[in-house]
Each structure stands twice: as structure tokens, then as C-alpha cells.
Length: 129
Ligand code: 9YT
Image (tube, helix red, strand yellow):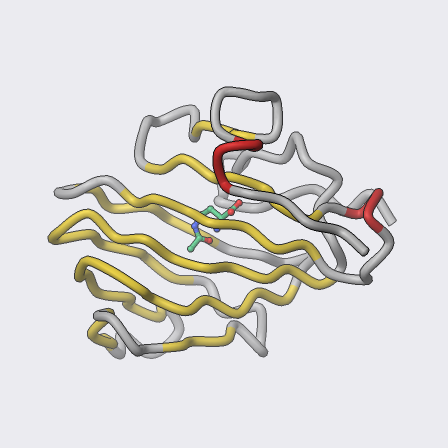
């Protein structure tokens, strides 16, 4: 049984900050936990735009607070992000994530992240598996 509180993560090496300052990710379950996925709380800061392209991962995201917009780059479609919305990047969709009001997102990655990943210049996390 694994039991954690967000306060156990904040301020540790499992709280990872984006190099561009756009987000902070609190990684509550990681590869080492052996669940087959990782589970994060991500805070996205207002008035930011982040280029993301998870070529090596699938990600599902559930918005619990704040507001923003996701634009998929292959077709220019825009999706409103607000509490109660879930999106899944089932086709490794390259996108822009814009934040209007600070967002609190619950994110799941398959395969699980190792824990130290930050986006490269193309918004990609490396494949360690
Ligand atoms: C929504 C999203 O992918 N934001 C970037 C951070 C990522 N969720 C993470 O590493 O937790």
C-alpha cells in the first residue's frame, strides 16, 4: 500500500520545476513505485504558453482548477480547459498549452516517468524504457 500527501512531495526532488518557469510538477507516483504509470499534480502558471509533444509517452490530464486552452498543432483545433475537463494525448498529439487562470491538473503518464524529466526544446520527455 502506498499512501502519500502532497505535502510529502512539495519542496523535495519530486517537485520538478519547468526550466521556462511555466509549471511545477509534483510527482506522487513514479516508475520506481511499480504501478506502470506515473501520477502527478501539475500547477500551470497564468499567462503562459507551453509547447508540449510527448512522443515517447501517453498522457491523460484532468483539470481540477483554473482555466486555459489546448491547441493541437496538426489541425489548429482549440479545446477549453476548465474544472471537470479531461483530455488524453492518445496520438502523442503535439500541442500548445495556454493558461489563463492558474490551473491545477492531475496528470497520468504511461510509461511512468522516472522523476527528473523536464521538457527538451521540442516539449519532449526522453524515453528511458
Ligand atoms: C499538462 C502537462 O503535461 N504539463 C507539463 C508537466 C507535466 N504534466 C508533468 O511533468 O507533470
